[in-house]
Image (cartoon, rainbow, N blue to C red; front, top):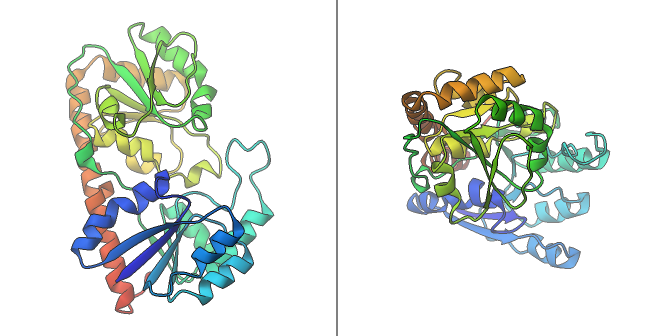
Length: 334
């Protein structure tokens, strides 16, 4: 089978983690995957929408095309699938406006109704796609290449925290500056490494600034002791697919995060990390892990094993292969 994915750009994080990562495995199974970027220019985008008639399946990733663009695409492809890993019918947590967006909702509804299949990053997104009229859905989580991540050694008697993200998602971390300061008060030797393109100082928890690069990201994560993540408890965040948590776990780090969306599915309290809400819960969790390198090592090993089983590129590629073969044989997903 020949698949063509229409993406924002080939180096976009979603294209890299949700499509490109699976290419070698699909090739090994006799399938071909090509990526084509959708230009911001309407005329150039129109040319792309019309140019994939030879593909067996076209996968449109995330892009909320206009009704006219969707109609053009549908007329020019054999089979259309749609991949979504965010609550695309909403504005994001930091938009400054209400979450509800009539334009975004209508555009997504139009796409999922004409697509043969919607591939969703989690069950929340799949249910919303069904509610909007999707004919069929399949959950394929965002996956990571565990082989890229060294295993953390957990040799320190204290603990260095790590957070990885972008200047946009850093706003979530800034929102919990009081929690970070509570950790700093409780553990004077603690440090927080920010792997990002922007930095801030919460006050009483020292920050180690680490400019993000794709080449160094995995090593910088694995050089820490505890991975942390926090997202707002809102409709947009419930659609997130937990990439940074998976990265920490792949590097053998226990994770401390809040109980929102897929966090509660990925982190097994007491086994791969802790789920925390209040300042006290956060500080207690970090203090427990900081005092016990053996506990960090056990939890980190369990976290890495969980990623290998459920969220690795190999696991995701198997889902893609089965999906392609089942749909091609006429065995559809619910």
